[in-house]
Amino acid sequence: MEAELLTTLQEVAIVDEVTVIKDKRPLLAWIRTPRFGFVTSRLLRCLVLCLILRRETLSLHLALTELVRPALAKKATEEDITEFHRINAAFCSSWVEMGEEIKHGEEGPDMAAPEEEEQGRKGIPSLLSSSEENIASNITQLIGWTPLVEMKNIAKNEGVQARLVGKMEAYQPLCSVKDRSALRMIEDAEEKGLIIPGVTTLIEPTSGNLGIGLVLVAVQKGYRFIAVMPAKYSLDKQMLLRFLGAELILTDPAIGFNGPEIWKDTAGKVDVFVASVGSGGTLTGVGRYLKMKNPSINIVCVEPSESPVISGGSPGPHKIQGTGAGFIPEILDKSVIDEVVTVSTEESMAMARRLAKEEGLLVGISSGANVAACIKIAAREENKGKMIVTMFPSGGERYMNSDLFAPVREECDNMTF
Image (cartoon, rainbow, N blue to C red; front, side):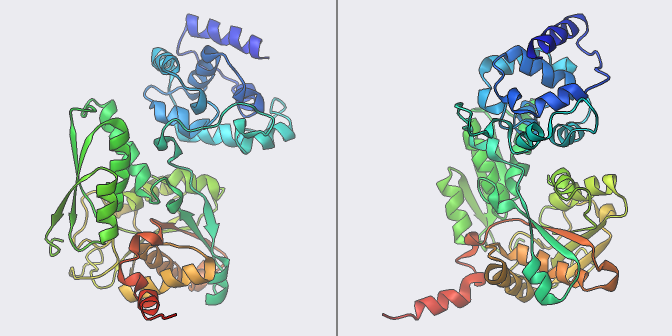
C-alpha cells in the first residue's frame, strides 16, 4: 500500500500541486494506523500531509505537533522542513477540522481495522513494539492538548446535577494556559516577518503567566525578552521569570487558544463555557469558536465582585491574580459574552482550597473563581444535566506566597517538634 500511495502522490504532486483528492478516507485511515509511524520515506510523509491538509499558510508547528504529533515530529529534520516549504502551495482547508478527521476518521468501508484504529488514537508511534525514539526535540512541542477532568465530588457535594468539567492547563510545560498563547503569538509574528531571532527584543506587560510562557518560547528561539509586571504580584512569578532568563521591570502596584480542544474532547456536548478575564484572549478565542460550532452555547464571563468593570461597575482592589485588571481589555470581544458572573476574592480562594482537598486539584486563585461561578450557574434549574466547562489557568504552586496558602502557612509556622 505504501508503494502504491507513493507513486500516486508523486504523480499528483508533479502534475498539479493543488489537485484535490476527492476521497480522502483511505489516506485518513492509513495515517491513523501504526504503520504510518514507521514510514521512512520523507517525501511520502510530506506528500500525504500536504495533499490531505490543503492549506495555503499552515505553520510548520501545527503540521508537526498538532495534527500527527508525535508520529512525524520525532522524525522531522531540516530536510523535512525544506520539503514542507517546497510543497507549501498544496496546503489549504482547515487544520482544526482535518485534525479532528485524522483523530476520529469517518465511517466507511475504507477505514482501518478497529484494533489499528484504537492503537492510532493512543498515539501512532507509542506502540510498545516500536524501537524508535519518541522524544520531543524542543520543549515547545509539548505545548497543547491538555486533558479535561470532571469534578464529580464538588458537583455531588454542592447538590448540582450538571456536569462540571475543567481543562488542566497546569499540564502545559510551564503549567499555564498562557503557554499556548505565547507560542502562537511568537510564531505568527515570525511568519509575518515582524520579528527576527537574535535581533528583535520582545517586551510584554504581564501579570505573570503569559510572560512566563513567552520567555519559555523566546529563549528557545533566541530572543531577548523583557517582562513588565505590577510589583503587587507574587514573588514566585517574578523569580520564575528571572530564572527562565527574562529581564524584569516592576511597575507601581496601583497601576493597575482551547476552543477546538474543548469541542473535540467533549464530543461537542459542552453547553456552557465559563472563564475569567485577564487579557480577554481566552474568553474571546474559545467563545468565538464554540459559538461558531454551536450558537446556543452560553459563554459566561467571570470577574471579581470587588472590581466589576465589565458589568458596568467601578474598578477596585482584589486578590484574584491574573484577572480583573480594572479596565476592559481591548482584545475582549464582548459580543460573545452571554452573561457576566461576579465572584469575590474570598469565594475564589475558598473554592481553590476545596478543589485541592476534595478533588486533588492544585490550582490557582482564578481557577477557584471560575469554579465558584460554575457552581452558581449549575444551581439553576435550567442547567440541570448540562455540561459546564471552565478553565484552570494555572497551578496552585505559583501562589504559595499569596493569601491562598495563608491558613496552612500560618499553621506550619506554628508547628513544633
